[in-house]
Image 1 (cartoon, one colour):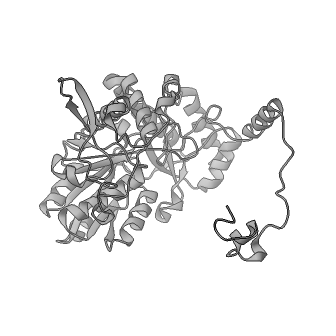
Image 2 (spheres, rainbow, N blue to C red):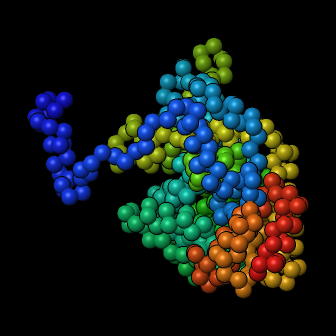
Length: 433
């Protein structure tokens, strides 16, 4: 190989790397282990981690400890599902195409939208793609983003828009919700879209209908990021005037893991369908009239010149989307509604009990779903460290992203949290605060 490319030694391959940063010795690796020794070694390493199987978790902020039915792992472990590559040849990809079609159908039913794609990388990139799509659709170069949108999602939006010449302006909040007066003062003829999250980063439900009226009155698009579990009990964004609905699908059967891989769902009105990024699977019939599935509206990325592409999303999170599909199929409408009700009820119980200790006070009075913000005189980082020593994972330190709310404690409560776990949190936090 060296001869073919005109080099004499392997070192010549690295001639552009300065000699002073090259490793001049062998890698410091341990000796090889037998299978039995390696398993024991890896188990010992794993036991040094804090596991959600042993520690009740009250940390949310975008990744949630929901129950994952064991059948999901059994099904997604089948080898035919391993590849996430786009099924270009429908004649040999009917199973994959059908699973994606069913996923899209679920997303449309949850969000109240007309069409959904085959998923995005995650919720943050889905929201950023929605911003680009809005600007392209209405031919304007400014978007308004609520400050109550997840901070990391806002960072991704900024990154995507920076090199497209799109101006991003933030809208403040009042009592944890979008400040409608601030929104009204900032929306202009150049505003392509208004972007909000509901439930927002504080766990609070936004007044979507009022925001939609403001956006549409300005001929701007209305983009909403949502928690899919909440849609089992709340009115869908589609009913409340959203043009594009996105969100993080991790809560639908995907484990918290170490922050990924997750999936972003993306849905829109039929009017915007041809501007949507990513893949879309459609239903059709073959020449014998049998039901079949194909990739539809294929003039998207690899089939055309890059500058005319709807997005740079070339593949999809098919395995994660399949996980969400299996999860929603297993639970059904009633099951998902029960999960949502349990989250709602347990979160409010936890909120009430923590406030009753007299050591915590509500940061906001607006209605919340499964997360809420409390104020405390104790530094949140210190409180969380003490709780961790008691094998409890505490909430998110809001002061990291919202200095004006410090010390603010963002607590998430899912259906997995038991009465005894919640009472233990209340008791220990009450003693420590």
